[in-house]
Amino acid sequence: MPKTIVEKILSKSSGKDLKAGDYAFADIDLAMANDITAPLAVEGFQQIADKVWDPNKIYIPLDHQAPADSINAAENHKKLREFAREQGIKLYDVGEGVCHQLMLENHVEPGQLVIGADSHTCTYGAVGAFATGVGSTDMAAAFATGKLWFKVPQTIKINLTGQTKQNVSAKDIILKLCKKIEADGALYKALEITGPTTKNLTIPSRATLTNMAIEMGAKTAIIQPDKKTEEYTGVEAPEWLYSDPDADYVQEIELDVSSLEPQIAVPHQVDNVHDITEVEGTKIDQVFIGSCTNGRLEDLEAAAKVVKGRSFSEDVRVIVVPASRDVYNKAEEKGFLKTLFEAGAVVEAPCCGPCMGGSFGLLAGGEVGLATSNRNFRGREGSPDAEVYLSSPEVAAESGIQGKIAKPRGDF
Ligand SMILES: CC(C)[C@H](C(=O)O)[C@@H](O)C(=O)O
Ligand code: SF4
Image (cartoon, rainbow, N blue to C red; front, top):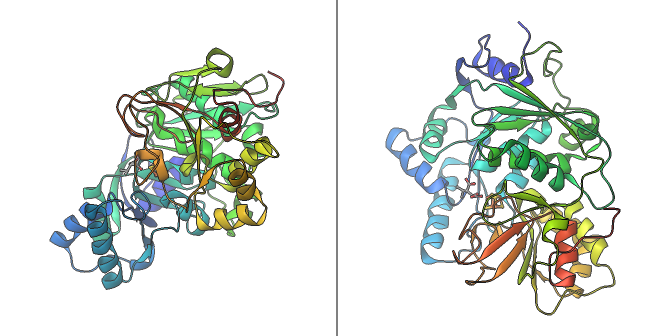
């Protein structure tokens, strides 16, 4: 029976020959819960078991309210540290990074089945894993048993062709796809992102694509592994792990990215996406460069390149948050952080930052933010009366300099 990569992973993990629409009761390879979702998972777990199924397969990063921004967050962090110690689980303490970046950098391998109590767990499809977000109660059951049920999703195949112009990057591609597919256009489907453009992207750029699958309602997104995946993860991809040429797809989407100009998601929906030409000149009060979408080394490099030798507008606060300690160190070594800092940015230690209105960097009513993150829902980055636009790091950097939404250098 011809299968997609998604059908293959769920078949392998459940020991059954499954097709889209079937139910799987599958063995989990890795499970992740963060400081917002782990407390409830731990509470549920403690009601059904004493020992986790395998402490070496569970990770708890403290990243959303990190360092603790309230007594409640401090209490949660304390409980999670105690739980991790008592169970022998690896906890990434405050300052280590955003949960998804830590999982991608350190743990996820092609062909694995990974769950995370966070909606952007789909990011790990960048290295050819089936990874999906689950709720805290499902996570409690998985902590205890190492198993979880899934309905095998149908797959939408997305074929990316063409070479992007200068200063057009993965974020612009995924924003364009959000516009095309819309917020509910891929409900419970898997996105298999393929084509020559995808092959040419680095793993971090692929992660920018897969990260935003959930913004179209998708169960996950996945990119078939190749040499780059093997280099990044340090493991060889298993031979069985590729979609068969005659596998069934529910829909096929073609996108030629060669004429794409920078894309902007306009308040207050991620799929409300426009060419930058339509919104350039919009005044902004704050820029946030970071998050599990665009807080990686190449994102900071892209921003630093735009900024080099120039200064941010005095009317704009620019907040830069590397997605992990590893990213931070490398960006420091290469001088990217210095460039951004000297231009006037506030550079913070790795965490989710203002992405979800966490620890710092909130917007006041009437203010306008431009962020490289993945959601611009009303009130997410502060006041419900603030507005958030989403863009690539290149656009964020240029806009921070000009004090308004502005095109970086390029032929568009
Ligand atoms: C805290 C968590 C539940 C949430 C998510 O699931 O995505 C957060 O990471 C977000 O980005 O909104
Ligand atoms: S960086 Fe933002 S989107 Fe990513 S996990 Fe943190 S809050 Fe969620």
